[in-house]
Structure formats: structure tokens, C-alpha cells
Image 1 (cartoon, rainbow, N blue to C red):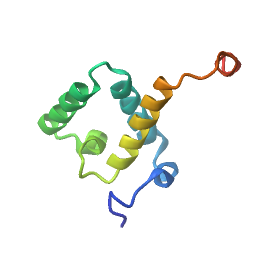
Image 2 (cartoon, one colour):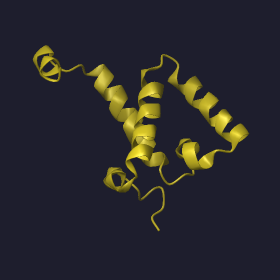
Image 3 (spheres, rainbow, N blue to C red):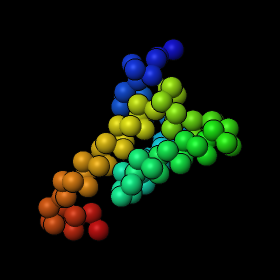
Length: 93
């Protein structure tokens, strides 16, 4: 079994689609929030209260999917800071 330090973006395709989407949505939400660190702390607190680790465990630093979550969060922050050219954005519509 891989350790969380050894897991990287290559592990993402082997995730179930629903779990991958959930991680990406949360990462996007935290990255876009003005106070994303506070949002992340609140989500971690909810995780500890609800103990729903199967669904939200990736938020905990010791979870094997946490590196993938961090990667998605950083990727979204970079995307926000580096807007795409208008022509590329229009092509996606």
C-alpha cells in the first residue's frame, strides 16, 4: 500500500468517479473562497464531529487521498490567478 507521501496525481484516475468529483469540488470551493483556510478548518471540524471519514476523510492530513486534494486545491488557485485568454474561454462555451 502506498503512503500518502508517495501518492500523487497518477493515483487520481483509479479513484471512483464520484469520489474524485467530491474531492475536486471541495478543493475548488476552498480555493475560491476568500478565507479558504478558515473554510478548510471548519470542514475539518465537521469531519471530526460527524466522523464521516469515508466521505470526507481526504480533508485530514493523514488520509491517503489528502495529497490529491491538496494538488487539486493548488491547481485551482493557480487557475484563478492565471486566467485563460478570452479566446480559449470562449471556445469552452
